[in-house]
Image (cartoon, rainbow, N blue to C red; front, side):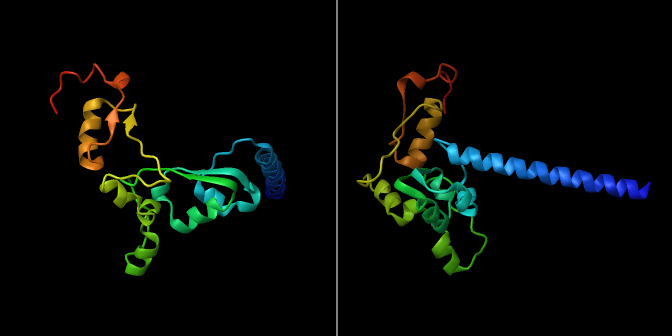
Length: 170
């Protein structure tokens, strides 16, 4: 009975490996034929051979991405790179308190490119577009956030103004 169990286990492992190989081949085929491909920066960084090059690379939530990974991923583009995100949100996660490590990896792309400072001074960089009209949150919530984090520059689209919070005093 033990020998039969070992044989069955070996057969199952062989089947599992065969299925895993089929899945990888199918994934490679899908990636190769894809018109649009969404992935994380980490996946692009860890699997460049599998992913290959792209006409356009869009890096979203860019402030959280470590600069070397961002540069590497941008290098996968044949033509254009768009970097988007909100520098008021989370910076890259760096698991070191050493000042040199923090200086090299702890800053986000918008700080390095002086976008943050220009924004604080009420200016926009030529190569940047600033979201100033939002549609997702209620106007009163937006107004609070706008004053605290964006110098009053973020406003709510009139069609988003909600009846649900109309009578609340913030």
